Image (tube, rainbow, N blue to C red; front, side, top):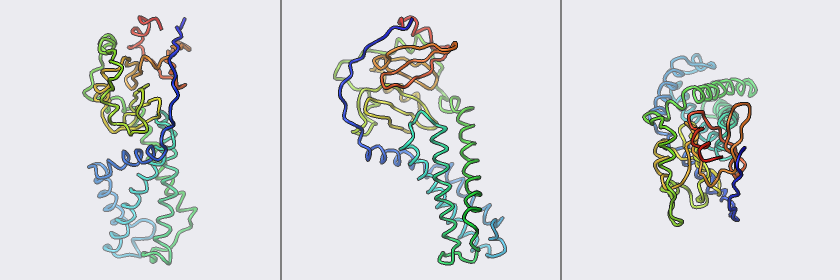
Length: 288
């Protein structure tokens, strides 16, 4: 039978929405000039310039095609990042699929509108010929949707292996023994990475895509860092790693629930975190 723990709940000020949005954009655009993004830009621009899709091969010279597709690819990447940043600021960090679907949808509309304008009579490349917007949108949505599906697939299959590269799958005893009760005035180093409006008691730390999501009683913040480093920076907070991708603070847990052989820890913010079999014994020893 699960043991109920009644945490002390204090009145909290709401998270500053402006700070949350700005942080989402800052963390998203931090990888704009990464080698991966630059490689995508080069390959996409050269491929489109040589192939000349959507009638650009016959209506443009090679130099003009290069200029057109360099502009389209550059602006498309910027708009794609914008769509992802908006989705990150709206959708909870724990729902990667919903966030990716929303990002793909927003990016599709923006990129389709961009190409529609560039090929309009008033645009700089009117010679391309203006396609029907619905047809253009369907093509762009197909591309963005495919990228989104690929991201979801990679996330579900390889995310743990990639993001935890070099992170030992430590035994539960080691995780539990490293949890130290901090002095009341001591804050974990990880809290210093959070915006002023999002700092508070850390309830949960999870890894999503290339980001670590830090949930406090003030809100959720996504930080681009390794999960191992995040765990090192909360060594003064008593808690457990309950899954390869999740750590929870002891003070945040109100109960442990079992359903059809699976175990979940229920936190005081209403969220539930799965507990993998490798980490169950520590909770059972604590009589949760």
